[in-house]
Length: 207
Ligand code: ZN
Image (cartoon, rainbow, N blue to C red; front, side, top):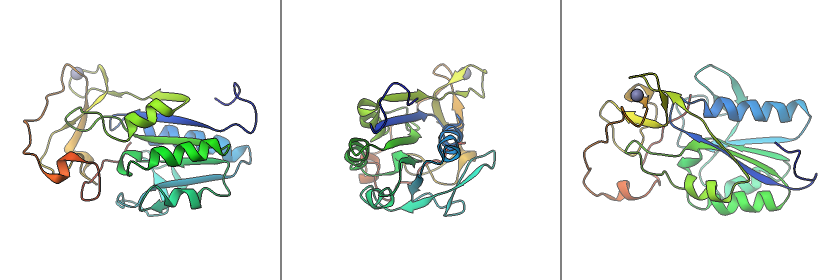
């Protein structure tokens, strides 16, 4: 990924897609490659996702990599000070400031790799991922497989009761669906939680 930019130049990579599409696995794969090349790697994820060990990224396939929990995007700048490569998982869980943080890190010569959901369970764009996609040099869209028909799936279907755009720790409440099999949920009443992806909303982890 890095060979078309001169050394010392930073950039942003976005890995996005629905649940069960392997975003975290792809993030870990890239971070491992950097570690093998003895690059200094920092890994962060939002503290809101605490279903698993707090200091590790864990995928459904049980790969693990040490990570730091952050409560907001500005904490990432301190974590990344010594790093050449910064990985950010579940980026849709962070505040809108993450866009500027990623820009600052890339401008400072760092490789920034973010992974997250690009749509919520209603198939709306999941901020701040759309903004990050616009700023990124490299974009990877991961697809799952539709559990209904086997086609490529780019949407996350809620199949159980939950609150928030995506509920933490409840992958059993969701499944990957293609655009044909996806059924939009009935319109929810407008609430503060429904209008922004901030605190109080829970997010899905990827697998
Ligand atoms: Zn389908």
